[in-house]
Amino acid sequence: MNEFLEIEEKIVEMLKTVYDPEIPVNIYDLGLIYGVDIDDNGKVKIDMTLTAPSCPAADFLVEDVKQKVSSIEGVSDLDINLVFEPEWSKDMMSEEAKLTLGFM
Image (cartoon, rainbow, N blue to C red; front, side):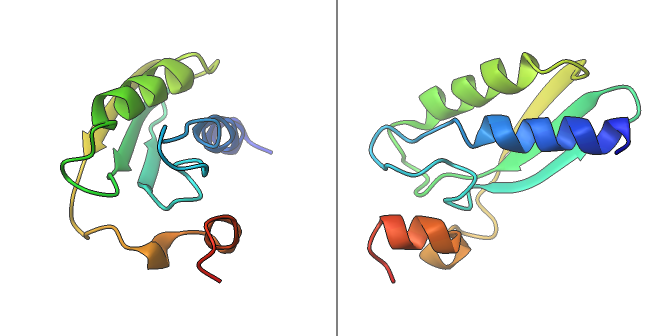
């Protein structure tokens, strides 16, 4: 596996350890991560959203992502872009998340 894919896999693994304090599902399986881009220099850009624009845990979630992803070897810089388009919906959750939350 090339270095780029290894770093991306580690980022996804790390994102799966970040939880909204009010929801027992990680932000990756919730569908809050819209994109992860890594350039040749190890600079990472993450597009993420929130379940609602006024989410009280927004600062906590962004800070948790920053700390955890920045700790990964090979990540030289991190830019988190909070976006609200497209608007998040329950359809963006993984099957596992839907089962956990009783939507299936």
